[in-house]
Length: 219
Image (cartoon, rainbow, N blue to C red; front, top):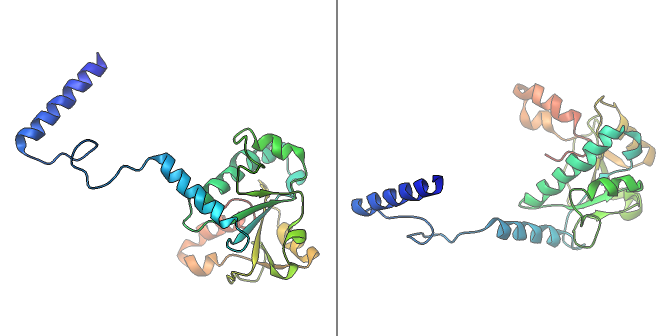
């Protein structure tokens, strides 16, 4: 009954438009644009990510998962079932995506959790790189820059640099955690120029954003 009523209402509306002489836009009518399905958009976004996975082409971005064992089970689930999928999907939707490298994947629990939302994760069916190795074993040490909200160095973008984000979900903010690791490993560190870019009128937003700057959320 509801379907029949809907079809009658639609037929009535089309009849009124025909009587008025207006142009009907839509599928099967006058339309200057082709319909693009969501699947087509997904394929195009996936192509861009695969393109960036070419070593000579793409800009790598590292998410350091060596922090996994330092977190509580609830935080580990949040990382694998929320933060990492979000970072992957957000990167996929970007106009110029990064070539994501998830390093320090040593705990089998990471794969067990992540395969719940994507069975093809950590396989050749995905362009993202998951490895047990450290980023120090993959990229030249002089090119590595660890992003940390506690660093006094403001980030100056360089296409030759490899930026590292700590894969750490911390409810209680761990001050100097990412900065301390960068210093121990002897790599450069920097913070995002949020305060300078956003200005003083966004002080509260800057403070909130800086809390998550050295972590896995990419926004």
